[in-house]
Image 1 (cartoon, rainbow, N blue to C red):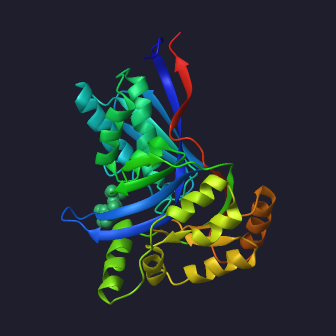
Image 2: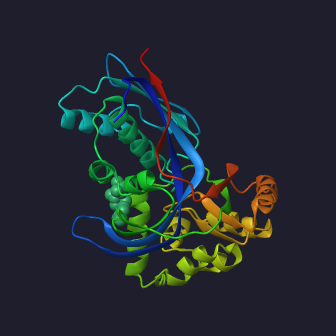
Length: 309
Ligand code: C5P
């Protein structure tokens, strides 16, 4: 519990890449059973919360024009649900500064939702535990619990049953943002369609990948990265093949589609290699923009509290 009543709160929440994303059967509730290894990356969004006469959402930064500022935004849902639980009105202005690409397969909307939950818990002094917040998190989306958790984690169920995974050292990534986004439900549906035609093969278990993470060796990790959604994302956006090839030509150890795409994530040998790969990839004309990032980083966390004086 905070000892001072806050006037404003700033929260930072990470993006994610799935190092391993094995998609199982479609469940009766419309979700697929997953086995995934998430890693939280330094590319992040900042969410600022300040009391206001009405609930308002503002968005600026990367892809801001494509983000709704009404009840369709996950932070709006987070605020109304948390306010309902607390028996109060959601009188808050939420400003989102986006670094994570919108509809990019890096869980940007989930990061914002996790940040809003954490920030409002502090702003309204609700004193909800991490476990209680995690329940709200899953109601908002499958990737929101991991955005709160951070680090490197094994996710099962919808991706919400999380176990920490040991990852030694820092891994260095280059991210290629796609031209336009992909809808996550469309990509899962496309995978079901491709599987109905007998293709593509399914990923095995992530045991070897977890050993490579524990060893902290990017060269060992690179050939073990895998994503069952990649074939579906490429089927919907065939140009991703060229982006993936260009990253390898630029010197990356491996490249995968991040989550449901279309962002491509390239694992590099070290920080210097990542800068070189990013420079070369920027010039290749195969994507909208390029960023370097590293992981693992922590989950959503309060970075600033402005007390009432
Ligand atoms: O949970 P979230 O709202 O992020 O999921 C978006 C969509 O992605 C779901 O409606 C579903 O179509 C698909 N999905 C799935 N299986 C999962 C997670 C998401 O089929 N485990």
